[in-house]
Length: 336
Image (cartoon, rainbow, N blue to C red; front, top):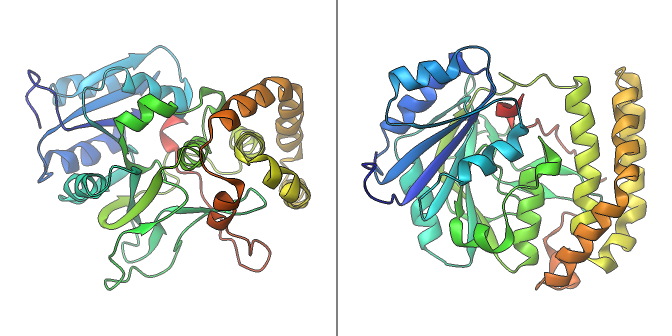
């Protein structure tokens, strides 16, 4: 790890919320990195399990930022960004273990082309390390999201970098200059889809997103997130529509709006069946209530966009009904 007296090449930000049992393995994997020009910033999101005190005692070289309450994954990472001195910003979930060359591989990826805004990792299931959790993400014309290669075998002959639509924030490296230009995570999201929103924004500004399958991380999926809890459903179902409305270029917004509505109808039926209809309806009501502010954000973003609707459309997955869209488990576990 870089000495505190000089600016590092990479600032690694970890957002933690009551993840005391997870932190040691995650931080140890960072200490074993072959790339040593980095600093670690741990943002404690109002934990009540002694996480902050434990890090202060056992990892004194980690920059510790303690927040009074859980501000969410988006605001937590933005707060960590305020302390970062690196040329590149790495995000890593607290429930992961990175292979020793993880940072080195991601660093080389961003150095290869200044047009690459972010490079994410091949994330494998911690308890099933031969299965892929994600290798970048795809975005469909209906506004749904799915992880590439989810639950497929990890193929050793599939190791070349590839352009993807979404850099999944579970384990990714971002170019700080791009963040300074286009901003980082939208704090209105709180938790979920903020990395989708950021990736979409980067594309609109003309940048690339790349997945580097040789940068490998093992993820303890669902360790700190309760899937289909009311808050999980609320944020997910609110943010999926925020992302679609804010980022879709004008021609595409109206062209694919009927498909988004069909997707939402399917979600309505699903969450009614699993007893989470109230959370779903609350999400959509809040979306409608805040539509004027969202539309102002959209107008500002689209006014700055450099990529044409035609170019954006070529990047979207169109077979959204013809493919089996695997369940894309929320990756931002640290916010709770």
